[in-house]
Length: 461
Image (cartoon, rainbow, N blue to C red; front, side, top):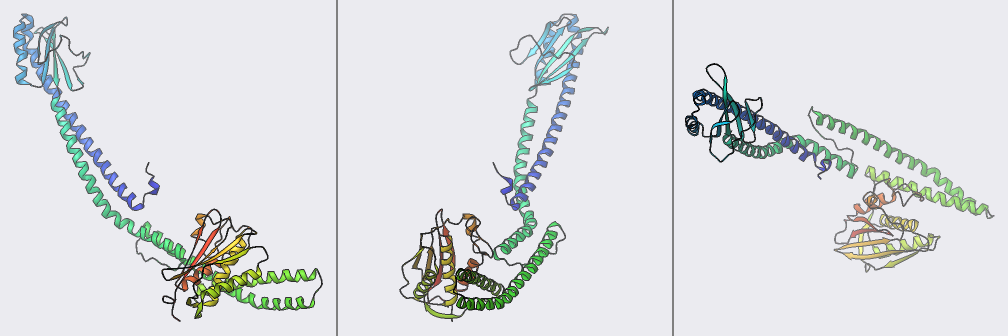
């Protein structure tokens, strides 16, 4: 069963135009054929009735004088006058057969017309006419059976012509509809592509130029107005994030200073525990503000890279040591493979930020007492780093969106704090280094990958 909702609007327009044309032509041809058939039948009835009247007039004397042979001779002349008459019968007033003519073997019965003077039955026309003498008395009846082979031939020819005409019309309809729908659907499909592009790239500055005054033109105008409003809202939000992040950074620095002072001055318990909890919360807040500042810089195009040469193996080991020192659970980070001290060009601090973020996520989303693997491979002059955990995995529908700003996988992040900025920042940093970042996930665990070009393909300093 074809689901029309899944057919493209381009093909729907073609189908509408073609089916409408074929339907109209089918009605047109059927109407004309039906009219021709009706006219033919009316002419045929008049013709056979005229013959029946002639036969009735010519057989008044034969019935009066009981001259069967003369009546038969008159009836036999029908094959010359009307070859399509296959049978003719003359009866007396009692309904007995007086004389008959038949091209085929037949019994002495005839078609009962009741009170009708003619009737169509299948491929035959039956006509009756009374035989009246000079005194206007009923002397008998004439019955004629006419075969409508000519009508059947006419039907066959006309329906054949109609069928061929419909096939030709179908082909021409497809051609014309394809040409017309290109004009109609081109603008609509262009709008759809622009909407997809805006959705995928988050570029809300895309404007479509169209001077049309029809419904599609109105739709494009509404789209442009909507994109303008979204872009304005996006800019205001980015400005707010940037301003709020900068404004929060100054008081946070003071808070950190006072907490350090309290930490040195206060050694009693449980006060010391409260100070440590406050330090941890302050560190989380500092990390969040740093992420918001990075997002603000990315959106404004002000995220700068300090390009230098460094060894990727050393950076990976330092990142693992940094995360391992802060792990308070019994997770174990295991390193597999090396890059043989290959040197890359890039922003060392930003690549470290990517590693720390991915490792932190692996620790956060992994169950207690589980291992985290960091693997290093080289393929097609690309340095590939894999960070694998054994958490709940990421649903298929979230894989494509997980690197978007403020997006978080619903079933994996319900009880874990965050704003969904880390992976977005990681994705932007890796892309700025001409690399790629992606995720592979199953029912148990996820693997985050990122690749960087070797020094031959690295971005220039």
